[in-house]
Image (cartoon, rainbow over all chains, first blue to last red; front, top):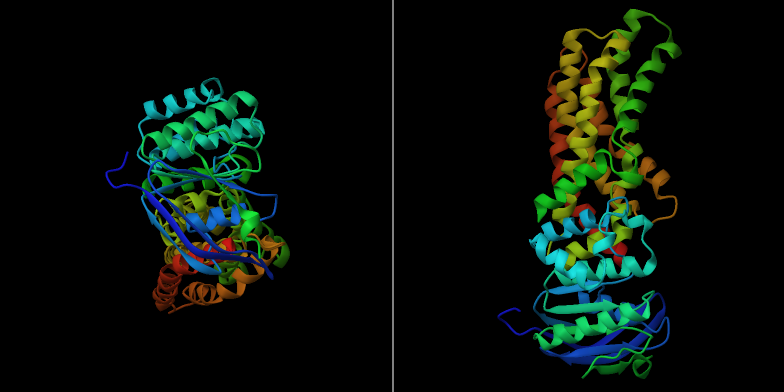
Length: 198
Length: 216
């Protein structure tokens, strides 16, 4: 993992979408090896918080400090749908300067090896989610931001994702995951967004 | 990373998948050049005098066709977000896209121009001026295309709006470009090039800002 310890810190965040303030006065601080589960009902602002943490959305108030590169998994896989999965993933491997072997290794880990020749548009929701997970993991960033990583996954895949998150944290990584489902990862902290609803 | 992105942009815009290919604008361009003599009659003198301008107008109209696949699919697919997370500014990805758009749109158009010139009965000298003018003007047209595509990405009816936006903005290119075909109008090529350079310089920043604004 990286020489510097990853860290993610948010102070007094508030988020406004349209006329509505989704949450306010939200602070969090995570260090190496820590994982946080953002929990809450649909529409409470989990994805917005994720995008604020990723730096893609400006918070209405507050600041975010990050140490270390970030990888984001959200509902859009960012894979070319007309290409076979292997080539769609290879594009990101080139972007991130990752060796093909490493990519194959991760694909095998989430059980996608047999699907690498299939065009992305023919993959099911769960398969696409796992493909996006391969892209996210392959990036090799110490900070993982996983927005609903378990959506559409079968029970076996859920266990794999939980194991991957646990391994990443044991390796000194940092992970924030948003999910309305229960997530079983040892030492996982939990943040109920409802507590900060404005 | 930027080389991988440029390569992807080129292959996507050239042929790729559901987005249609680079061939469509060229065929449209030739179709306009072919229809014009039907419209005004086969008067060779008239065609030779006005043909160059028709080629410019056809090029401008053909530039509208690829607008909706320049930015929007990648914005919706989450590609721009992923590049931003990797610390690559939108300005860079848009600059790459302008270059890719020029290669896949303007180059085929310039290759098709001799055919259009033949259909319109233009002289070799006129063809040369026309090609030089297009060489000077199309980078600006490509830059404008990407900027307009970025501004209209995510809007309902964005494609139609894009066409409406790009035409008035491209008027300087058209005036100087077509003007260079008049006797003694060679200076027009330099002016077309100047307009083009301004557009190429501004477009990555305008498109980058538009993509960031689309995230809000």
